[in-house]
Amino acid sequence: MLERLKENYFFAVIRGKSLEEAIEISRHAILGGIRNIEITYSTPNASQAIKKLSDEYKDDERVVIGAGTVMTTELAKEAIEAGAVFLVSPHFSADIAAMADQENHYYFPGCATATEVVTAMNSGCPIIKLFPGGLIGSTFIKDIHGPIPEVDLMPSGGVSIDNVAAWKEAGAVAVGIGSSLASKIVTDGYESVTAIAKAFVSAVD
Image 1 (cartoon, helix red, strand yellow):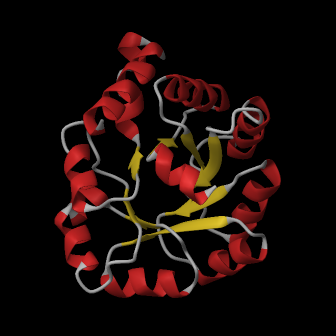
Image 2 (image 1 turned 90 degrees about the vertical axis):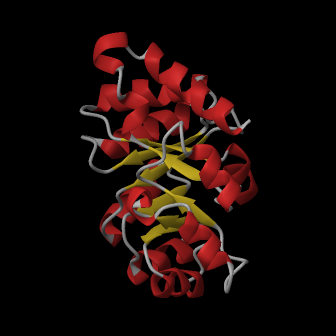
């Protein structure tokens, strides 16, 4: 599963204004070739969205549904029960890491310093989210890979069609794509999500 997540490369960070919007953005991102879907808990009824999408794509082994903005162990448990395969948070939590390990689930915490990265590694986190990516910058990956070449890093926040290739070249094992995916829904509908997803995929291909 971990290799599948890396092969998919893109994580669609879904922050829907409603349950229905989150599901539609997810479906159209998948149509555009982004198959790691991270339903954030800033979305209303996020657990329902995770469950519905997990059921809907259970026969498509390419699609992986997870949870984002997991701030507490209670939310982590709720996400796992809903069917989330992976958990993502904007920070590192030792308690969430321990629960994820106990439940045999992946936990990708947000880190912004070398100390945080090493702490997360020592807690068994297989991929570490660099957050906020736009503030940290792609050179951070090269700098960290100097002394710690084995760490797998995934920037989130600030990743765009224009800079995603630079992130990959710097050594990012995956990238999180957030608000830009849904940036044209109001004017162009959900089909715009598919078009933007395809543009991201083409940018690294």
